[in-house]
Length: 151
Length: 201
Image 1 (cartoon, each protein chain N blue to C red):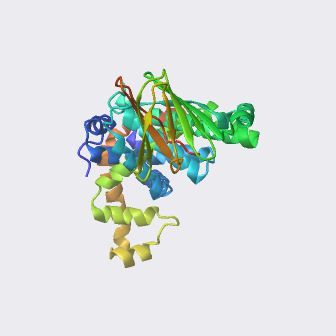
Image 2: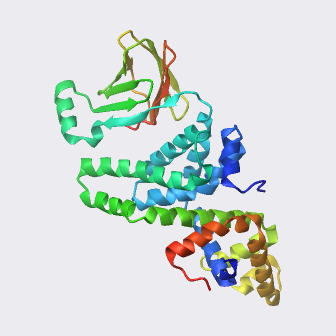
Image 3: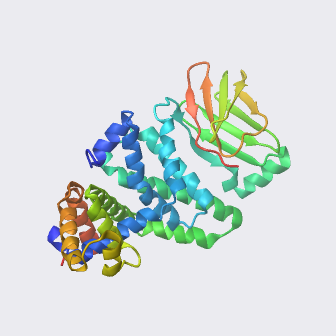
């Protein structure tokens, strides 16, 4: 097989390989490297299962009824998080409902901690700087992290 | 600079807490993730989001990947899925249906497989290049720049007599062929040839 790599072909392939790497912006590489900070965080990663931005009809309904500008649902094996972003506040509910805490984390590392009440409700006010993610720990030991949320 | 070029070893080390291994994984596969994002014509902002999600998912999956050797495939599929999610959201809210159609076609026609194999080959070639002594790296860098430098420029910059550039180029390429990263590439390269139908000279 390697007999197929004559000098010209090898040089051409190398040129392409180097070009491909040079086309990647350094901020993109940094984003990847920084993700390792989340290694060994025991929290389960919740998947985004609903986003009102993907659903035009739903947005219209939610808007007229509750003045919400965005509704999101994150789902994990341990719990779901229903989020609603209003003009000035982030409201949420843990399902099934239970006590706990929510940490809102931004990319700069700023953390806001708020309590989750007995019916699973919480409010983060003001809305964290976008993008942010929520880390939920409940009284019964559930530990769940959302993906990055960009408003 | 590479103790062990195999993906499996890098994944295992990164899963065990070795940050250097993680960085090497990112260096190696960021071009693959970036290339696939670019196919969806995402904005830089969306590309950053997709990249962030893909790497975070990988961090989370490190210890659970059933087949670490299949990492490039996992990355390609995950990147495509995350990109498509962004494109779908944008096209639904802005009614840019053609964008979505284009993207779906890209997903369907197996282009991602090709992308993944090319990325593997390119990553292997870059790793092989990194194994070369500095003088070979300098010479090959100048020869592969776009446009390539002339022998006169190479002579001026590196002090190699013009008559020796040809033979040195051949020697450096030969070292590249004999590097462990290039040899490790063997299997994938064969697959590219079969899939791409590119004739072996």
